[in-house]
Image (cartoon, rainbow, N blue to C red; front, side):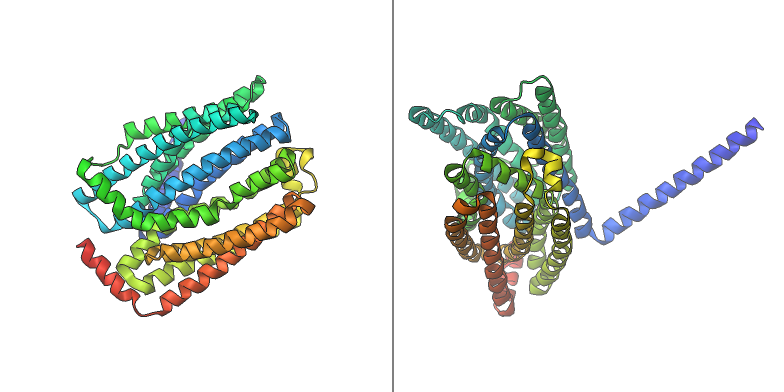
Length: 458
């Protein structure tokens, strides 16, 4: 009987192993047949790690400190996000677009210039933060300086981590980005949990832990997945001038449009107070769950749209953008409905009873994220056809509408007014981008651009 039972178990094990192998083969086949969708799902998973880490970080701070302390955390974080955004648009964005037109040694040397430019950006950031600390100390604004001191040491590691992520996505090496962000998540959340458990959580400690987690992950990436680069000194300035033709418009677009959420935190803090800033930051962080999908799609859509336009012309670009828009419309629209039905339940569950009555803010920010998603799809299309200047026009409209609305809404409505102003600006930008892209795609001069790109690549 024993022999029969063992044979039966072995047979079941073989059968189970065969079933798992069949599933694995099937998944690999789907990934090979639909590579863009496969990488898109992996990118969404990666963004879930990043957004989940950000959300849990804010939840730990919100539950173990006061809304004022959470507000200061978001103010310092806004500096990190702005500098990181500048780095993305000036250095990483041109590389993502132009690297698709290079191969072999040429690509390796182009990547070497990319990393040199990242190093220069890090040095400038450290010098600027040091100067900011001196200015704030001289004016007596010292509540935020502990976080800035920690940021002087943490900022290079935070920027390096973001540079690695963008480099990985430029080559569509999504698994490498997932490994990097998973290490950061474990180290950062574990460190913050220990600080909170022992009652040692402070603004300085928060950013020290964040910097240490990024440093650990970056070191591991360098050891296990070292990039293929060649540093050629003579190429640093020519590549910078070449990339700046694209990057200057991406930077202007970012500074005008994408810095608005960070600017809104400072406006609310100065006009209403740090507590209202904490409420707005908590709601924005919760809505960050929706950006798991939005940013995950964007990370892959940028290089994919550039590739499809370079190889398939307007038809290939239309197909890619239409699929992305349909997917974001369904998923983000569903999230908006969920937030509408649940009200402030999610934010109270995550951050505590201090944040009751925030349902209207959540719904407004969720719809704003939906409009931003549709605008990002159109914006990627404009980047793919090498029209970053048109994105800048849309972002000028976005910031203008946002600031005008904020001037009328923030003082009487507080954090809700800031959310309504954000929605007005995001909707305006989405409409302007969509109309502009449609006009370009309906024209007949883009096909010659594709031919020029192909000739350049060869």
